[in-house]
Image (tube, rainbow, N blue to C red):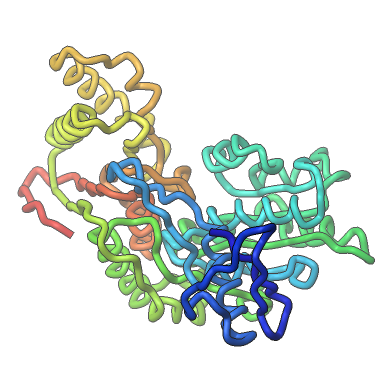
Length: 400
C-alpha cells in the first residue's frame, strides 16, 4: 500500500496519500537519518540503471545484472563537470555497455539529437552494432579522419576500444578534442574507453601518454563471461603481465590485481590440437550439437587469426556445417548468413555465446597472449580454442 516519504526532510515524515487510512508500517520502513536516505537513493539508482544480462537467453531464465559499484560510480558522474574521461576496463567488464549507457545519458542530460553524438571505434562490425541502436552516429577511426567527414553538428564524442586505434591517418585524439571543445563556453563530452591488455598491434595508437590520461576510472569486474572462461582470462592477464610488449604502459598492468568476476555461471573452455581436417569436423559437430539443442546460428562465431586466413579456410568449415545440417534434415539455408566467420581483431568489442578460435597466432610473438585474451573474452558461455597440430606429432587436448 502506498506511503509517501518526504526524502528532502530531516525528519522523514511519512504522509498517507489521499484518503487512505493511517497504516502502521514496520519500523524498518522508516528512514532514521539522512545517511539512510542517501543509501536508499543510491540503491534505487543502481536498480533503475540495471541492464538485462546477455546470458539470460542461454540459461533459459531472466538474469537482472545490476551495475557493479565501479559501473555505478562512472554512470553517476555529472556530465556537466566531467567533460573528458579515460575509462580503463579489463576484458568483459562492460566497457561497451557503459559507453552506450553514457550516450543515452548525454541525450537526456543535454537534450541533444542523435546526430550530435559521435561514437568512434576501429572495426566495422562494432560500428554496425552500435549504429543499429539508433542512439548516435557511429563511424570507424579511418572515416573520422577523412577530411570530408561532416563534423559541424558533432558536440559529443565517445571512443571505444581505443587501444587498437592507430596514428597512421593523423592525430585522432587532437581532432576529437578540438571538435568537443569548439564551444569554449560549453565544451562537449569526450570519453575514451580502452583496455591495454587487448592491444592487438605494435604500432603507435595515438593515445596520450598514460600519465596524461586524466581523469581516469577503472572497470575490473568481469560481468560477461562464464566461470571457466573468466579463469582463463585471469591466466592470460598474468601471462601478459609477465611478458608485456613495450606498447603497453607498465603502470597499466597493476589493474590485474583487481581482476574478479561474478561467479556461478557454468560454461566451457577447451583447448585442442587437431589437424585441419579434424578441426573442420570438430567445429561442424559442435555446431550441429548446439543448433539441435536450441541455440541459434547467431549465437556462434568462428574466429581466425587474420582476415586472410578467414578467406582461405572459412568455406571449408561452412561446407561441413551445411553437410551436417542436411544429414539431420534440418534447415541449413540460413546458417551461412548467421554463423559469424571473422578475424579476432575485427570482432573486437563484440561477443557471442559460443566462440571457436581457429589456430590463434600473432604475427608479432610479443602480443600473442594479448590476441588470445581478446579471443577468449569474445565468448560468453562456451569457448573452444583449436590449434593446428604438426604432422610429426599429435598434441593432446586439454581443458582450460
